[in-house]
Image (tube, rainbow, N blue to C red; front, side, top):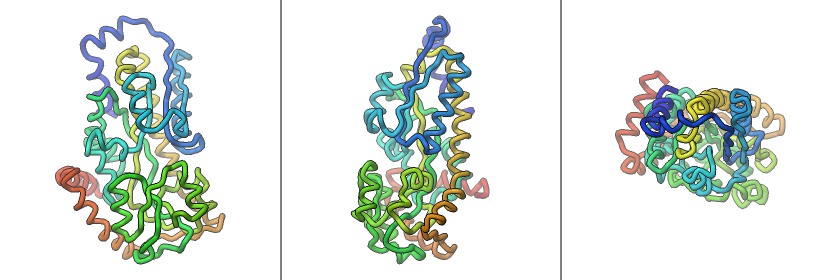
Length: 334
C-alpha cells in the first residue's frame, strides 16, 4: 500500500495539513456506496471495513453503507464524491475509462491470466497511475477490490469448444471492449441493464451471461441457466474511491484509521472472492449445472480469437501500456 499512502500524504501538504491538525477530532460520518448485494464478498468487505473503522475510532467515525446501488447510478456516485455529499464509493473500471484510458487495460481479454497477476497490475504502477487520474476531478483512488474472472453461463448448450459460442446471444456490459470480446468469440453480445438481467435470462431474451462466479451465485443465476464454462476471459476489478474535499478535512488520526482499515478490508475481500469459488462450483454442480473446464487446446483458440480486440484498442490504450502489463506479468513468471 506504499503508493497509496504516498498519494494521501501528498494531498495533506501545506495549508491542508495545517488546517487538519489545527482542528480537534470530531465525529464524522462516512456515507459509502457500492453496487452489490450485502451477501456478496464486496458487501461483506465493506461491512468489515465499517466494523474496523467504528471500533478503532471509538465511535468517532460512523459508516453508513448504501449497497445495491441504493445511492444511485455511477454518475450519482461520482457527483456525490466530487461534492462531498458522498464520502466513499466503489465503481468498476470500465465506468472509469472516461477519466483515463489506462483503465481499459482491464478490458483486454486474456491479458491477466490469474489472481496473482491481477494483484501485480492493480496494486502496482499501472493500477495506481490510473487511479491518480481521478485526482484533478476531486476524487481519490484508494485502491482496488475485485469481482473476479468472467465465465460463460447459459441455458442453450454446453460450451466445450470455441465453435459452441457461435451465434449465442450473451448479455454484455456497455463496455465496447467487452462487446468486441464476445463478438470475437462468435457470440452475439446484447447489453442489458443489470437490474433486468435475471428476468432476461429467465425469459430467454438472451441465452446467457458473461459473469464471474460470486456474482452469478449471489444473484441466483443458476436458477435460470444450465451450463457453465470456465472461460476466464476478463478480470474485473473495482476501484474504491474517496471524496477529496472530505478527505482533506479529516484529522490525520482519522485518515490513518480509515486507510489502515481499507488495507485490511482489501485483503479480506479478495480472499473471500477467491476462496468462495471452489465452494460455488461444488454448489452449482449439486444444483445440476453442467460445468466445463476448457482444454488447454481450446483455451488457446479462445485466446487467439480475441487478440483482434487487443489490436483494435491498442491505439486508444497505448501499445506501451499493453506491453508494460505483459512484461510485468511475464517477469513475475506468471
